Structures are given as C-alpha cells and as structure tokens.
Length: 186
Image (cartoon, rainbow, N blue to C red; front, side, top):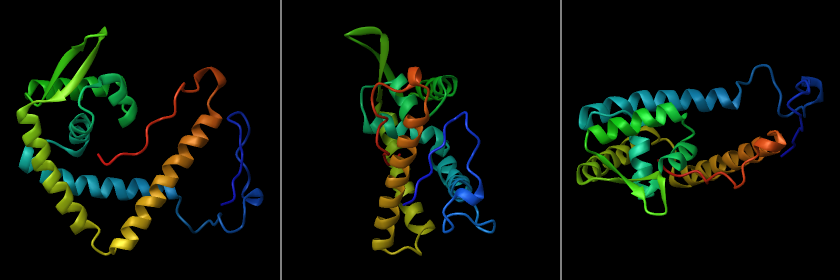
C-alpha cells in the first residue's frame, strides 16, 4: 500500500502528489464511512440496550472492558477506550452508583483503584453480550463468514496503521513509553 509521509508542521500533500488510485473527488473519505457506520450501528443498538439494561453502547463498552480485564485501573481503561478523563470518571461513577462495578485500592499503590464487575454487573454484561451478538449477526447479515473475517482482519490492519502513524507524528516528548493496546471486542 503506498504511503505518504507528512510532518505536523508541513502542509498536507496536494492531490497531485498522491498516488492516482487513492485520490478521487467522488470517493468519500474512509474516516467518513467508518464514522457513519459507527453512528448508524450505535444509534440502532442503543435502543435495544436501553430497553434491556438501561444503558447505551458507550457505557456498555466500559462495562465490557472491565469484564475482559478484571482489576484494570481506571487510567488504563480510559487509554484503551480513548476516553477523556472526565468522561471516564462520569461513566465509572454511574456504573458504581448502579451497583455494577466496584473499586478496590491497589495494594501496591494507594493512588490506583482497580475495577471489577459486581454480580449485578456480570448479569448486565451477560444480557448485553447476548443482545450484541444477535445485533451484529442481524445488522451485518449480508457479509458471509469469510467476508466477516476479512473485514475484521482489515480493520485490525487499519488500527495498527493508524497507531503507527500517530506514534511517528507525535512530538518527541509526548510519545508513549509503550505501544497502545490492540483493538479488542468491546
């Protein structure tokens, strides 16, 4: 796949400098397509989750990742979900108030709270998983199993490519000390 390198201070490359097979005024941007698909799917799914468990996809992603990583620190959770600290705090406070998660102090570092699901949180997670699996099968039924696997593989490649691009374009002092986590199903 052809690549174009651009520094943050440099002007974007012109359409003339891009490979002819990747630039066309009549093709929507990939980021637009991905955002549109995400928005349509999330809005549709929110209705089902709201009715069944009183939560939306955004809050359920937090719950799902705590399920996948019991004992995860709130800061790591925010990194993995790419959520601002204030929004993450809001979601965690809401989940805790509903009795779905519990926080415990890390025995090695009293500044860190470890998160885990309560029994009620496990029940909500289980219900939301059943709904999510059924919705994905229904929403994307026009893809056969091979296409579904191919799409997921391509999305993993896109994710890795974007992380690589971000790391190579971050100012030297702000580069992460460790690689961001792989995409997870949440």
